[in-house]
Image (cartoon, rainbow, N blue to C red; front, side, top):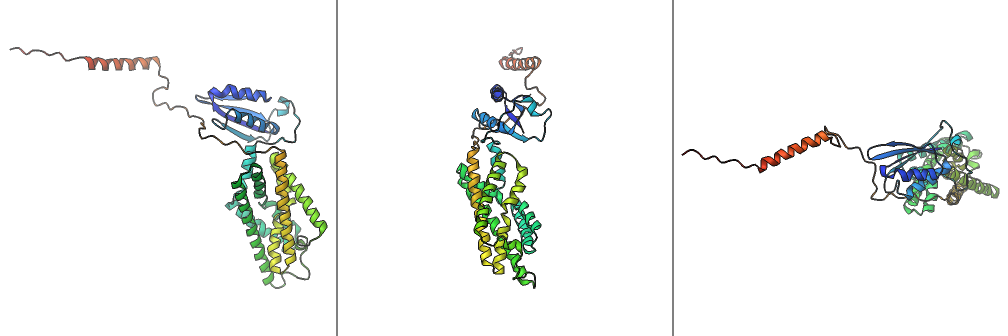
Length: 353
């Protein structure tokens, strides 16, 4: 459920209200100012994209005005009591602007991204070397590798080369950092006596390094399911399910496992871990792309250069914006006196001879 706050010039109110009513929205509230007005309206997610797109068509958020989309946890009375229920179609989704902002936030390399990569890689490495499945799962929860993958898929949908390049670079940086930390932890395991027994490699390393045909098939099926789940979660505004999806994707442990296995001399395990990561990466990109197409996801409409934002009220510095009749009269008298003074000629007086 969303609340839309629409800021528009006063002369556009009627056209916006007409669109909102035609879409079946009720409970519309308006705050009117001197130059612009603010319209509040609530909407279910399945209607949100239609509302934004119809408003964009008449220029709201494109050539003038602002559309703010706010998530509502609850509303009293419930929205179902005010609106007739509509069936959710397969293409129902949140507004593309909301999807775009969520994706863009996780596509760029940042300090936060690097921090979570380092933390999750260290946790994954400790879990793999200590054969502790719970610690490995913890690393999956906080690993941010899914964000750039989704950004790549979305970039292919909207044909945005810059977004594809940026997200690919971010994913590559994350891979290199995680691989490097895995290699460092593998080096520690080699240098510390009796830290790891080569005749009994930890099972958490083995299950991510052994190659079997059945295991390969299961990994492909899992990656396809993850791609579907993450696509529907993002387009449906269900961010709470992304934690479970991150655990299912298991992107971080295979990357760290590559570095550990290379330093331990387990080259076959390292190669199979790399294969698992590539399968997850490719399948998620392809399946998420298909979901975005099904949901009719597109690029957000660009704001025109001539866009006009809300105007501030005129400042009142001692004199009213609209002068009263008394003020007008005083100004008129003052101008009249000045005109008389300019036109009046001094009278020459002849001095007595």
